[in-house]
Image (cartoon, rainbow, N blue to C red):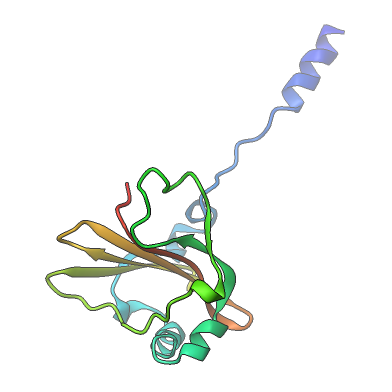
Length: 150
């Protein structure tokens, strides 16, 4: 009986699994800290139109859109989920510019998921957007406004 109980306990142990999407793809498919010029051409085409056409932008967002509003309370970040609805969305028509105040970088996973980070160097604030390539093209799937992140 002890042998059966030992077998049952060891066979029922939960196998550990990684929760990070980066860990689930081959490292050769992950490119970090990229500049805009290194992104896939179809994304750059989408990105320009996304910032110049408000109707196109709205059609390329999955609402409710997960993220954080600008200037969110630091105690709020990471503990509660926030979702934007279409009526709360403000058209994103300014392309991020690299200068002495702002730095922009991109992470790309398998040319299917791109995370953009815009950092205000002086105030140590960051804006984070995630875009995913779907059957219908590129979509904004996450938006976190300018905030302090740990």
